[in-house]
Image (cartoon, one colour):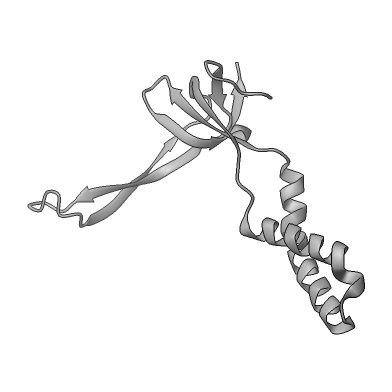
Length: 131
């Protein structure tokens, strides 16, 4: 699905927003209190896309995998055996992160103003469905 500004969307999953804290009596604004609940937006909430931010940045591990893989492909054949084996081990350790990144594909974040007044910024397109 391609999201663009002005498009109507619906949440497809419940989103946890944060904890609700009750202040101690007699100490307004003191910041101390007990957690009394959890705020979330339920699936089905609708709104309008205000901004499309583009692809999510790659993680440090993905960038490191790409850097090491390029190094190995370009210079691996000229490296001493011990260095090459160490580089292969580093690449192998980062393979799961790289595989997960490729499985996610191109992910886009957006800013959505929901009809109830809430604004979701940096929300992934995966949790939205076009109307």
